[in-house]
Length: 217
Image (tube, rainbow, N blue to C red; front, top):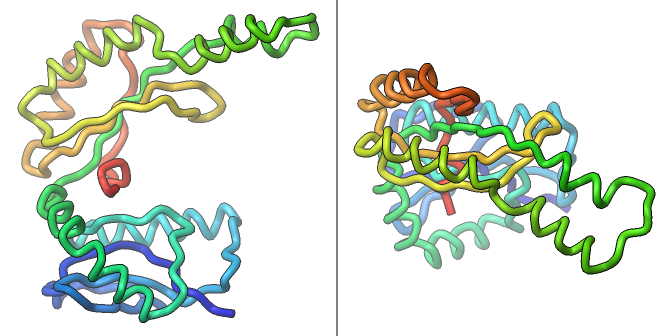
């Protein structure tokens, strides 16, 4: 049984978009969904996930897109059309917010080793202590919170939206700060962060630009 793997949602008035020959567009409600036909159970092979991300990036470089995470699958074209009609207003608002923007990330590395030792070392641990350890492990250390406040203040006026979340990157816990930055302000955004990083130790490292995954929902 075949399904449709979605790459992203764009406005349907972009006639200059160039996509891979395997991709197709379904248009409805002033929107267009970009997809490929896939097996009902899609593979999670890393190479396929990376290739998916590369295709989303190519679309993003050409037009404003609401990017989908790998694994966003709908049953058939009728289902896609129904989906576009159902979420028309939400998608139109989101496209306006994402217009001509890039996502930039700043990762602050967290040291949660002490908290994890309570759980991983082979010693008796009470249920109460276990829960306290998990709470500490998933809390944002005060230093990271203060750094985030400082960074947000320094970059004020250079981004439309921002969000933050705990994540794991290269096996380390990090506090990921994500920013939706107008393309015209990207050089100043990077310059201002780098200037701040020169004066503060372990402030974090910057990455991007990326398709705006963290602002797509």
